[in-house]
Length: 157
Image (cartoon, rainbow, N blue to C red; front, top):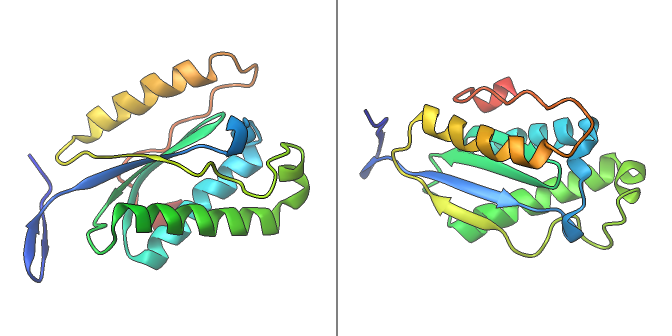
């Protein structure tokens, strides 16, 4: 059953899936510290923007985020805020680690992928992420990263 939200002048549900890729498709998320810091930064930004981060998952060279309650922002606004703030903070906190990946003047590619996913169940999202992650991490020698549990509040990141 859908999890509809009630607002002052609206009622419904809309989830947003955003995918970002580091510049030159560098595998920066093989560095577990950068991965954890980026996940935490997405959670922090979501709290500041008053949107709900449902899930944040990473391949070695990209990130998937799912949001709910994002109706006060357009998709380009939300993508810009997430990419801009996360890039600024990660570059400020980890300049030496990011320098190893030779990203140049910006951390993220100019584009991004998005889709509104409406009433998709937690199981469907988990299946999608697990299927994608196995493919992307298969060539890595490191142990596969445990997937973030769905529907945790951003404060639990």
